[in-house]
Image (tube, rainbow, N blue to C red; front, side, top):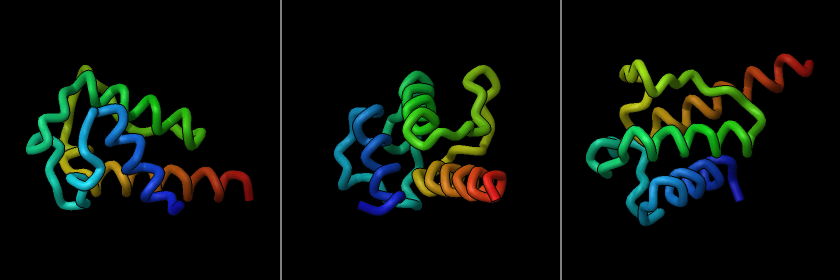
Length: 86
């Protein structure tokens, strides 16, 4: 299973979505992902991959607009984690 598949599985599970609906260009708002769902998704991704994602539920910004934004953020943090380990 690829890292992207693992990310999408977490998003689908925590946001109670059909996995087949998750495409990189799909807007989270179009999937009716609530802010609470997004917090659960972020926490689950952080725990699964041992990373910290730049997300603050109290000050929502445009960092996570699409499913692809979530994927890119996890991939970026994973790359930084690998660099830090050297």
